[in-house]
Every structure is written in C-alpha cells, then in structure tokens.
Amino acid sequence: MERTFPALLARMQELRDLQGIIGLATWDQETYLPAKATGARAHQLSTLQGLHHERLVDPRLGEVLAWAAAQPELDADQRAMVRVLTQERDRAVRVPQALVKALAEAQSRALVAWRQARKEKRFALFQPALARILALRREQADAYGHEGERYDALLEGYEPGMRVARLTPVLTALRDALIPMVAALAAAPRQVPELLQGRSFDAQAQWAFTLRLLEAMGFDLEAGRQDRSIHPFTGSTHPMDVRLTTRIDEANLLSALFSTIHEAGHGLYEQGFEEAHYRTPIAAAPSMGLHESQSRLWENVVGRSRAFWEHFFPALSAAFPQALAGVDVEGFHGVVNRVSRSLIRTEADEVTYNLHIVLRYELELLLIDDELPLEEVPAAWNERMRRYLGVTPPDDTLGVLQDIHWAWGEFGYFPTYTLGNLYSASLYRAAERALPELPGLLRRGELLPLRDWLRTHVHRQGYRLPAEELIRQVTGGGLTDTDFLQYLRGKYGALYGISL
Ligand SMILES: [Zn+2]
Image (cartoon, rainbow, N blue to C red; front, side):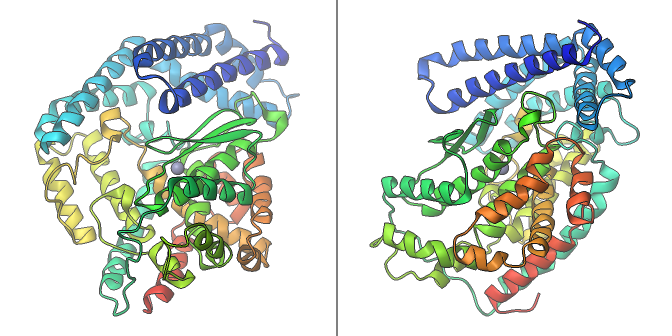
C-alpha cells in the first residue's frame, strides 16, 4: 500500500463496499431470505465480516493512516476521513480475536437463554448467560481503554465522544423533570380517549398510505425502497440504495404509519450524504443518537403534530372510510399522543419513553462496574419502574427481560435513544428559527423545505464533526434537555388542558 492519499482512498472505498454488501445481505436476511437459507447466510455474513476486519486491521493501513494524519496539505474533509477511519481501526485492533470470538459465542448462547427465560418468565434462566456477556464486555472495555468510567469505552462504540460525566447530569435532570410531568398528566381532569381499539384497517390501504407519506417526505424511491419486516429498520448499502422496512398490522393502523415515518427519517439521512463523500468513512452519521434524532424528529415532532395531521388526516380518513368512521382530526391527534404509564419501552409515548431509558442506563452503569449482584437486577428494575412510572411489572418478561439489547451484549446503546429525542427537539427549534413559516408549511403538507434544511445542516455534513459539535454548530448550543422539555410542556399541557 503506497503512502499516497489516492491509495488510502482506494482502501476506504473497498472497506465501504464490503460494509455495503454486508448491509445488503443483512437486509435480505430480515426480509426475503428463504427459511432454509438461514445457516448459509450466517456463514456468508461471517466470511464478509472477517474480510472486512482483516482489511481494516492490516498493519500497512495503520502505517498509511499515521502518515496521512501528519500531511498538512490534506483538506478538511480528507483529514476527517483519516480521523474517522483511524478511530475505527484503533478500536478494532485493540480487541484480540479470541475475545471477538468469545463474545460472538456468548451472544448466541445469551439469545437462546433470553428467549427461554422470556417464555418461562424467569430472569434466573438468563442470568448465567448475562454474567458471561458482562464479563466479556468489561474485558472488551478495558481492551479499548478508558480514563475513569469503564462504560465510556462501550458508549464510544455507539456515541463517539460522549462520556458518562457529560451524560449522567443531563439524564438525571431529565428524569427528575419527567417524573412529576407523568404524574400530572395521569391526574389531569381531561384524558385522551383511546378511539382506535377494536377497529380493523385494510393492509393494502395501509401500504398505499405509507408510500404516500414517503413521497411527501421526499424519500427517493429510485434510490431506495420500502418492504415489510417484523421489526422495522433501515438498511443502507449506499446513499443510492437505502432500504426501509415497515410493519403492517390490520389491528393497529399507527404501527405502519409511525414505523414508516420513523424509518424514513433514518432513510433521508442515509440518502442525504454529500456525493463527494460516497464510499468514504464520512458518508455516515457521527453517532447513533444523531441518526435517531432524524427518525424521532420526523416521527414525533412532525408526525405527531396537529399541523401535520390537519393536512394528512382527510386523506387518511378517505383511505379508511369505515374503519375511521366517527374519528376527526382532533380525536386522531389525541390518540397518537396519548400518554400512559406502560410497562413496555417500545410501546411508550414521548413523555414516558425516556424514563424507560434512564432506568436502563442507570442499571447498565451498575452492571458494567459490577456493583449490582445479578440476582438483584429484577428487583432493581421493578423498584425503579414503581418510582419513575408508578407501575410494577407483573413478571420478568414484561419487566427486565423485555429488550433484546442485553442478550446482544449491547451495553451503552440505550442512551442513544434519549440523545436522539433531545437532539431532535433542539434541531427542530433551530429549524423553526430558520424557517418561520414552518407551521404553515406542515399544515399544507409541504415537508420538503424541512427536509432540505435538515439535508443542508445535518445530512450533508456526514461525519465531518462529532455529534455534539455538529449539534452546537447547527443549534448554537450543545446537548441539553431544555428544548425537549419545553416541547413536551407546550404540546402535552395543551392536549391535557393543564399547565406543566
Ligand atoms: Zn430509529
């Protein structure tokens, strides 16, 4: 490998091509793969990932990256590419292959144990596998290296640059503001009726409506597609090939609508990178939290707004004339924003959602530091559910066993959901300042000016800057819960007729 930028760029492109094909094979695995091909696909993916790893940790690449980092004539984008790939490579190099293999095996076992434990509603069946995963993740965190908090080394894998010392005060203040807000909403004299239960929504009409939403949001269906899967997700092989999935459930219209809007938020980000960055390490979001800010901004801030449904509800109503009989835009807006103290994170509304996350974050910090005996985890979970949300899980499946993340070993992932919510509110406020006519545009179903603003200020930036620096550049302030809390107080105070 020559010590020239073109040689380095060629390696970057090769690595991105491999990632793209891994993405495509993974998308296929979740959508169209014939049942009998599961084993074959696992081998294929493992081979491709092995190739990618080999090319990434190649010592010659390390030498050329070190050389490139010292070349003053590189432009800002080229320096960013070198910085991002160096970070990725350093992390990959630090973890011994034996540990990577042990983690993969522990994950497979933990998944089996987690499924069985859920079936029997007994955390104890998952406990030994979780102990093993935690031990390996601690070892991995120490291999990555950290100053102070071991959790930082894991957080870095999802939210580069974020630290426990920065995150904990924000999440604690958010928790302390949300607990009384949730209690006040539960006690409000005006409650929002659940209008859609027991109705059935034609699957074909749902599908057609989701395509209409994608078109209005400006998702390019000639540079991507939508399919169905059990768990909606966004897969990307290239900015010109972005694959969304949604979930159609005849008993639940909201599932398809909001899955599509959410994934399209991710998809617009993936389609929005600058062409000059394609096939390089900076055609990427700087963090999971920032990626999630795009899906949450569209799903919640826009997609659950009154203005949005003033435009789209008449069409929705026409698409389901019988199923939506007797429901008007006001009732529908209420239903999509109903607050309830529920047990399951993925079904939680915008107000209670982040309390589910703070609970997990607090337990993860204790678990990674080995400060909570595993047999006490269900009790610690339930105690926090009572304190934060006023509900007690009747069993472990509806409590501590509800998420797959810990079985995957994904400690450090949960807080990125809340970062997404906080960033989404701050970004939307910045968009409102830049586009004073935004509420009127939404009311007319004109979503492209907002998409274009996000494209310029967020998507096209790619990974030039770490997430919080990008947020600071766009909004004038860094990570904060102020914009999010102000957004919740305004919207939910009005909806529930109380002052929050
Ligand atoms: Zn998402």
